[in-house]
Length: 307
Image 1: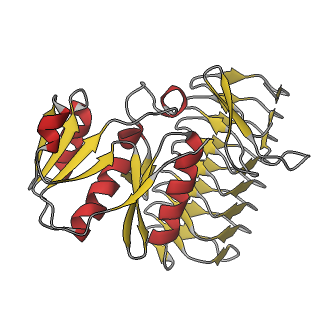
Image 2: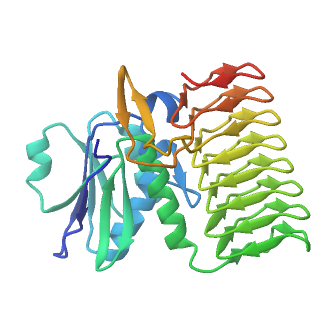
């Protein structure tokens, strides 16, 4: 199944950003209240929808107005507070919204930088989130940026571009391979390997863990000797010791994922787990590739999650 579609932003001058609803298979797992992924997940410390608008305005400062479908007043308020100079409205009639000269993009999407310009990537499936956010981290982390208000032990090695925000504390003997983003007030314990990942604000990673090509959405507590590979971990989720997300089938086949009652192909040979907001995983839990855990779930210690 094709994960997402892309289109280049029109080079002509536009006055309006028009967000449209699009199919979404992420709500049951990755939004706290079945709200909207665009406001509930962050990239580089900003809600995704805010990041998208910033990128469009940088390319076209003539933007004067943002239009959202009716029912997303929380996003309208968020954008109005962030972009006070712009008019933010909701529309009920799609044709009414389309009557304006506009840049149109799905509400759940990511604006990516690619030559010769920006590309809009629609986010429909969880693996779309993973690829989009890690792509953005790779673009934004062109060089290492370390906040003066962070603390990094001398024995920790940073290799490749990393963005390390205010209040971050990184203990001894870590190796952090970029492009990687570590959000505000996060704490990295001793002896961890973190590679090509995005770690949200107020997250704690214990010791002896590996986090690779993954998203920790924020306020996560990762214990010790955990392995998180090619996975998405929702906010406020906790992992006990020795938890592992596996990311590769023994027969090297493409990994499948369950959407409702249907099993679909992700098109990926490497894909780990999708763990919802507010989950608690006991010690020694092993999650097979392409599995999801619904938000607010409790997985007992020693469970092998194969279904």
